[in-house]
Image (cartoon, rainbow, N blue to C red):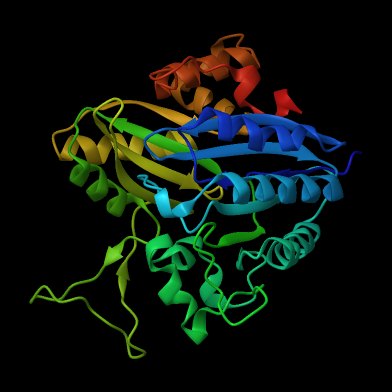
Length: 347
């Protein structure tokens, strides 16, 4: 069995094709690594890159792309819909065949140390690699985003896991990078027939696991004994979500991260969004998968939509995948090609 690790870095550039191409080209320069996908989004002004390979080679490719981004992206000029902390916003390592989460935690630590030392970019650890409980959640680390980073780095509670040399931690050009180890994440967005971002935001609050702050009868946010906000959980487990506006299509979208698709499959999230959208008088028009998706997630969706007919029909794996694509509206923006979007078909 090959020892394989996946890496899915997110770069804060989704509009300049020359910059995106140059970053991606650094992956091709590393042996024993295969570039699987490069997906820029102009509204998010963000590009998600996916590559796999042998652990040490993947770590090297992650560093080389970070080096390229630090040279080519200037965060002082960056604007976009998606939350971000730096030019290389997040670099997760994901165990695949023959590798463990512990292997990926090691890679994240070694990558982070090198980025801080050689590139002068402060690095935080998250998810399975987090050294502190309050840094497990990526959204917590990103709070305040790039614009609030200089102030955040002055807070002793937010001293980087891998600091840069010298007293000043803030790198105005590159910001900061978050790295870690996690399970396979499906980036899945659901589209609405409206351009009202507030509706998408409301749906996101209803479905995401963290939910929304609890309020008392006076409309005040409820705090616990330690002064932390008490949240009312949303309806879906292992789901992160937010509402965004896609200027290109003049529609609102619920941007979803399925952090464990065994807990919540894409079709489950899609149907839940449909239900909440209908309650607000809005239609769902389709969805999209950013990056790659495991085959099992789409087969499960195909079986769900085929329902009771499944036992009476001779249905192939590809039939189920195509059915899932049809019902989920995965080709609303561009044609969904299983051979380019399903990780098992790409490796």
